[in-house]
Length: 485
Image 1 (cartoon, helix red, strand yellow):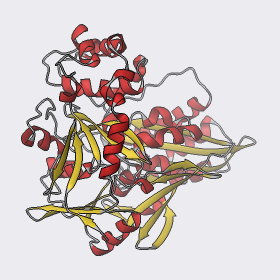
Image 2 (cartoon, rainbow, N blue to C red):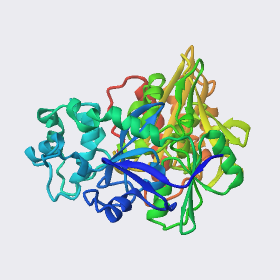
Image 3 (cartoon, rainbow, N blue to C red):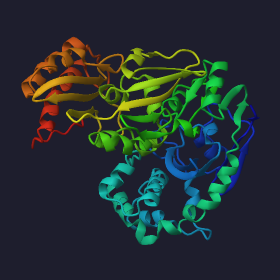
Image 4 (cartoon, helix red, strand yellow):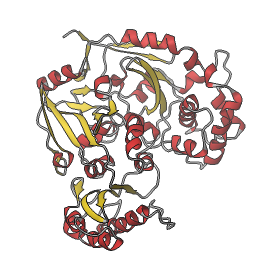
């Protein structure tokens, strides 16, 4: 295996080669401390506030794509063969402001100014892909940006006005796309990257087969796709995560496609990239997917990482359990598949052996008689962690419930099926009474804990109430229930 020992990427308009990179080195520190590009701010250091937002462009199957990411938890080594765009790159050669910046000035979108560069970068990404967005699209794009001065209304007005000041067709990233594609293609040399600093080691495998080989050599290495969780191990808990094996650059793990009977999702597919395919078969997941963190985290975080992390409050596992998903684990050349619910053994313990990694997820496509729903309960509607997450998959034939898969997060040490509630439903008439009877069985399925997100009593009560909401939603009821707290 041919190995390279440096990290190479493009920062704004400059080629960067770093011969020494540690596992815990972040993009934010590199920008601010090493390059003195201080427009990118540190606010929360955990990917919540968006003050550190930059764009990262990467070739995927030969196509250059830019996405907003949180520089505070984006690990530097993962940027090999990428184009990093910071807010300083937006100004023209004569120093004139970018259309996004002009719109922010015109509509007084900047107050104290601390969060402004992050908002500008998120709006830049939105404008490049959608120059005439609706208010809902703007709000969705800005979920991951927090303004402490409550200046959202003028920022939204600015977002609507960007195109008045220019067109994405005339933007530097558009005009230079072919040239940048060629530069990044040159950097993608197909080698394994193995770099270190002060004993801290980073490895970027050359392929998925090489990934399998690396993990057999180093079975206890930290595996990182998007770093939306591991990044906090670095910034908040100061953990030593070395050696690190990165997989976010592997195109073979970023395939998502609808097949005859299944949806195939590679373990490296992000929330953003999985949305369209999942919603095409399961429309109810559109609004649910949009409540997973903010745009920056949805761009970085992966479905595989959300599963492998094993958190009892992860957003996607309850949905995937209810849909009957299976996962494929790989060690070397050997693969095994299992129902996703069997992967979660206990709190912090998953059915993954040393040197084994999650390779793909397979989701059955929907049956004609199935009824679906997914609900997220959190203190704050946008960019918040679930207190309770619930997913329903109930098949009704001739007015009788013939099968039921119901899963919850936040109710146990792992994401878990409500087996007693399911049993109560199967064979019953499709009715509100049957659902409420099943809800009453939740006490036999779960004994939730009390923590700062919710009390045990609240969790159990809201979970029971979701059965009623599921019935009403299926009846196209006029009753509006706002599940935000």
